[in-house]
Amino acid sequence: MDAPVTLFDAVGGQVFFDRLVARFYERIETDGHLRPMYPEELEPSRRHLALFLGQYWGGPSAYQDERGHPRLRMRHAPFAIDELARDHWLRHMRGAVEAVDPEPGVKAALLEYFEYAAESMRNVQVEPG
Ligand code: HEM
Image (cartoon, rainbow, N blue to C red):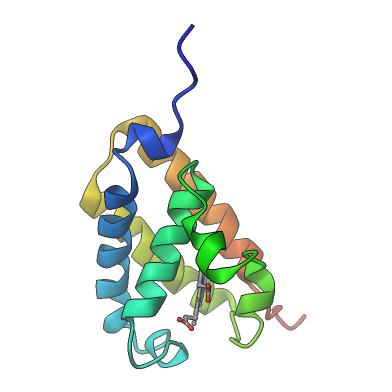
């Protein structure tokens, strides 16, 4: 029997995530709500997200080797991520997925994951009433 193929292998490896994240950050650059949260120099942020996603989807542990345990909620604690921030982030990531246009099974898996992940990064609750 063949070994199961990871999504990382199915999309052709790290270069896919590099392209995806490049498209995502093109959108962040012009987002007036999200851009101020990011450092002036976006290249390190781009690299970290691309390596994280490659690792998450079955690639080598390059992110962990460079940055340590992801602890993503903790790393996002300094930023006020409300519903609006979550929605902007998700819109840009959906746009990036559409732009790189992977095969339908991959696209569905990525979109489902990003929707869940973006909501789980939200750290500002809506005030009741
Ligand atoms: C929901 C809205 C989100 C906002 C507003 C947001 C914002 C940010 C910001 C401002 C940074 C810091 C960039 C830097 O210092 O270089 C960051 C880092 C990062 N974000 Fe997000 N993020 C969001 C969701 C997510 C999600 C859903 C994921 C994963 C799927 C993610 C993965 C990462 C990673 C891997 C880093 C780099 C951490 C590091 O090693 O320093 N983020 N994010």
